[in-house]
Length: 452
Ligand SMILES: *Cc1c(COP(=O)(O)O)cnc(C)c1O
Image (cartoon, rainbow, N blue to C red; front, side, top):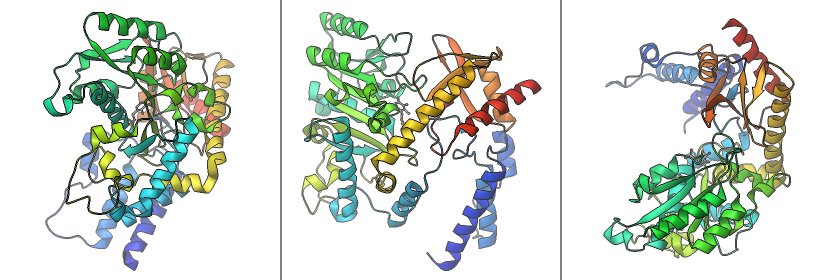
């Protein structure tokens, strides 16, 4: 990169930092207004660097700020600078993670963190894994391995079978989508009821599997969720593992959200039973604050990764063994280096630092719940250890409260529902946040509600 582009880049970053400081919630603007406000058209003629920088600066200025202290809207937030450096260098290098020839030590680095995760989770040493573009896709890979080990012919002759899958009604929507992609069919996914805490009812799971088998179906897959998207609930993994073993179905743990507790001595008990799963998906881009996206699929059956995803291609695989050519176990062909940012962070702060991040989220969430409990205008909707704090304020409908906070550029926070009850869902996932930021959140919300 030449000097002048370096300077442009630095200036854009400095400008962005200023905007984030002065406007931690981007000014609200409807999509219609926005496309009139910013010149988004691409031109036939080239642009001067100055005009280009202005156009770029405009775009950055209006983009929602997910890394600031006022963003509680999604299951990611904050900015970890070591991880950001790692990711920017990955872009700089622009490797693709399919062969050792093209990725070199990056392939070994990715394997090193995959093995570290396998060890943390207590899975057998012989387990293996890879990465994909997000939790939806790593869940997909888990389902495909299960399908192919249960009905290997599907890969060549297609579906049309009696396969049935099981997940709780609180599971992430990717399970249903993936069943459609995989030729299983959405209607063949049995939604098992959740208990009052949002965790799968294991007794109902066993009953559903047996009922299907009696009816001539072929149960093949149970998706257990470790950290549900709305409530942050953990399914009873140990019980589900026992049922999966008895009923001979593949057990996948969707630990996209909650897997991060593997780093916490205090909360890792929530994952008890996860080590017996056939496959596990985990997102480091949620609770750990690694930039989007950073998602892993791990399995105790390395051969299944090959059975489901391998393909020969003599234009690609020209050197080295399969072991270090992870294109052979990939959902995709070209694959960006999403491991480096995680490695850069982990190297820098250690597992101890990752543990602190996770514990801090839980501590801040319990601080928020304490605040809610001690203020009579609030109702706490769920009282479990979870980084999602669910509440209502003064009987203001949660969608109205959240949307008007957004339109007033006060706070970014979303709402959720459980058993027909709607509530504000405040996701506490920003490793840079402190108690003061939680207080600020409530104070802003209260002042805003006054004005409503
Ligand atoms: C976020 C989430 C996913 C999806 O992950 P993406 O990376 O957004 O595709 C899957 N499962 C659960 C439980 C999640 O919270």
